[in-house]
Image (cartoon, rainbow, N blue to C red):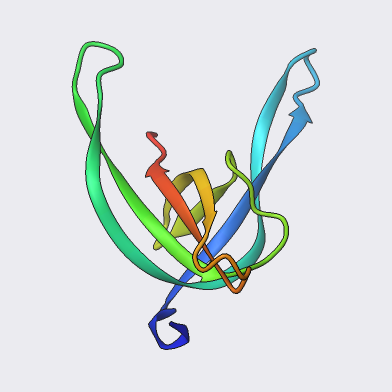
Length: 105
């Protein structure tokens, strides 16, 4: 498995930032880089609004680490993907899979 972790990704977490006008916005920051095996999944169709758009989905397999959770993001080659779910690969906490969906801009 280790030899397949060839793609560099970044794990991102969000924080609420006061905008100074009584509101707040989310800012995403890189928590740490990781090596991953990337597997493309079938695209998901986004039917929001008046147009249909395909959103890319993928699975990123990385070494096990504490921290990542659903709602975080990964960045792969400049594109952000939301982590939808996290699963242990072998039940031994050696590797984890992050099921992700492209973030629409």
